[in-house]
Image (cartoon, rainbow, N blue to C red; front, side, top):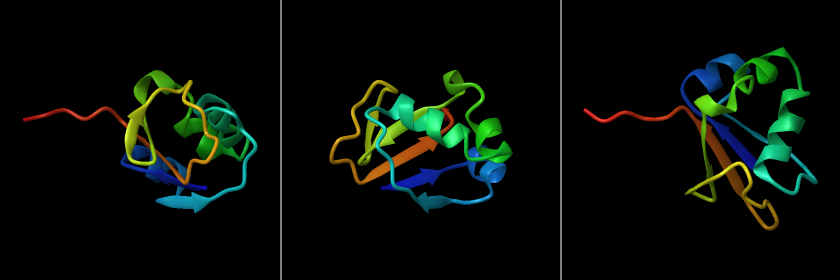
Length: 81
């Protein structure tokens, strides 16, 4: 699965994306796995209330299932203007 990071998440993790293998059943479980990868990941995912997620380019919740998913993207909320 391709996991993509945008804005300050990319800065904290030090990568725009990474290919990972996971058995996580949901986005939330994936976040738990990612937090355990190191300090940068733990910092990026410290407060998931400050994040949005897209699963295969569709906005989703952290309860969204990951079965068959090819891409998960994490980004901060966007503002218009």
